[in-house]
Image (cartoon, rainbow, N blue to C red):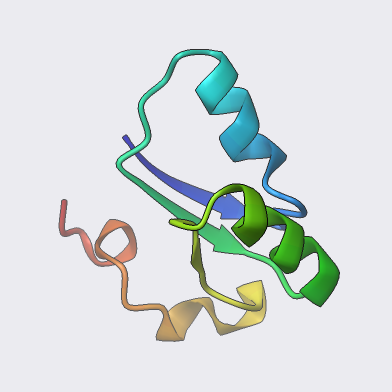
Length: 68
């Protein structure tokens, strides 16, 4: 599953999916708080941080461009 988490915080969405037994292939996260990003990346180094949701048009990720 590919996931886009807006206002991701410390990555609790990723934790919830893991605890529910849901396999995550790619986890994209939009977050601007540097401390929250540090915690999320410490727990899940494969999180792809996208930065501010205000810049969503510049994100080059398949789920926004219709590419699987």
